[in-house]
Length: 248
Image (tube, helix red, strand yellow):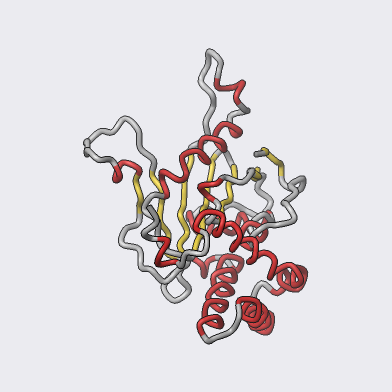
């Protein structure tokens, strides 16, 4: 994992669409503003955290930023809503926070490591309707206590194209949600995954949605979704979305 000033970040050759899209500075700030209600300007200094593959996060799309002394972590997926997301994010949050304070050396000292306040968001773009807006690690405790010694709070955000309103506040986020919804729609109509992706890209280009990104990256788009599929298979194998809910 690396702490990078913007502009020096190099993504791997195999990346998902979400991570590639929101590793562009102006889109990252759009994402933060749309989801959190912040009002950062496009020229606000921002740090992106480029991570090594985290096995627990393999099925998901994760991005982390530090901006104006605050840490924002976003995890996105379109499958089922996983109530264990606070537990999944524990190690990732630890790694990002460690970087944000200056590395391990800053922790083993005789003064407080200056930690940025952190906000975590779980972006759900699938069909399942969220039953709550917040997921807490303490909800999973076998024995409930009014004052747990440790807790982790993750904000659950509904970005389903037909229901979600937040995506309309960002052309990049809205475009991403629209594109992925089209892919699902065209696949359900009987098309192959590759055909559905290409048809969805054509539709977006004809409607001037993410046109700059899709025009520049057209040849890479199918590979980005293949990367996402590979990440999911690394954890779930060939299990369907419904079967994944019951993995033990």
